[in-house]
View 1: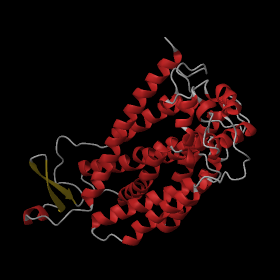
View 2: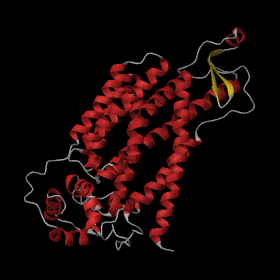
View 3: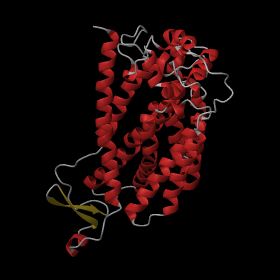
View 4: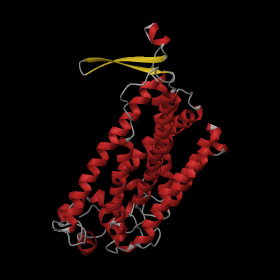
Amino acid sequence: MDAAFLADWLNLLLRWAHMIVGIAWIGASFYFIWLDNHLHPPLDPADAARGISGEVWAVHGGGFYTAKKFKVAPEKLPPELHWFMWEAYTTLITGFLLLCLVYYHGAEVALIDPRVMALDKWEAIGISLVFLIAGWLFYDWLCRSAFGEDEAILGGLVALYCGVAAWALCHIFSGRGAYLHFGAMLGVIMVLNVYFVIIPGQKELVKAKQEGRVPDSKYGLMGRQRSVHNTYFTLPVLFTMISNHYAGLYGHEWNWVLLLMISVAGALIRIWFVQRHKGNQNPLVLASGLVMLVLTAILSLPRPTVDIGPAASFAEVQPIFQARCQPCHATKPTQEGFSAPPKGVILETQAELRARAAMIKQQVWDSAVMPPGNLTNITDDERRLIARWIKGGAQ
């Protein structure tokens, strides 16, 4: 079986599975945050007397539902409790397998950029694993240290660490690989928060109830703290999952700044939604997130092309396209590891090249992210010549 064909199908299946379980995890998380923030005092006084702290009524799919929350625990535990954890664990498992397939197996294409740092494949993989592991260890240490007792200080230190990580990743890996790893680092933190803190705290609550003792409040406080962090990490992580489509961001000279700005925007927007659930939304929070997105767009504007020289002819650039672009972007790619042209983009004829001139300029000149990892060894002079051809109207 053709290796590239097999890799494509593994990519499809893993990406699909990752998306499915990720939706299940984030959907459940968002729902419970909504639920907690929409609880009202129970309508039935008897419910309040038996420890119900709040309830919410809803209608969906032709039926009425009611959800009730106990202050601590029911007087008697039911025979079956539903635990929300496997959605998170399977998101990590499928995400790591996808990382291995796309960014480790294909490190030369997706992870390494010699213009950023000259790494061999195993060096890049080793640095990646260190970032994922160290990211969790440092974050967890911060939360468990004395800094973790003050939410404002802890939040500032976590934000500072994220800034350092974004800068470092964008100076080690390709822009595409850096963005993905920033999100993967946050994603690992989110899942391990569930595994090491949130679920053990819930298990302690159940165990204390079964043994007839009062549970230690520290487990609930730690779980709440990590749940809040997970909530604000969510939108930045979702952005990095789709960021490989946006070379204008990850291929920018200030890509690490853009990554942080759009992450802050996502966190602010998420804060506003949580406030909205509680009925005390601050429009300035939402406005700040939207303004941050606008500033990110402005900062990511492509560099001007007025000083690149006179327009070039198609005869001058045709050999460059043949040598540097068509090994991948052809009806039948000749570049090892490609069974089909990436994203279905074929650049064989003058008409095909002219039709995608704006895209080519962004990928080859503005962001210089293509060819990925500079597999075909395009030179700066060749990039400039392509930009000159496009500047002249791609004639």
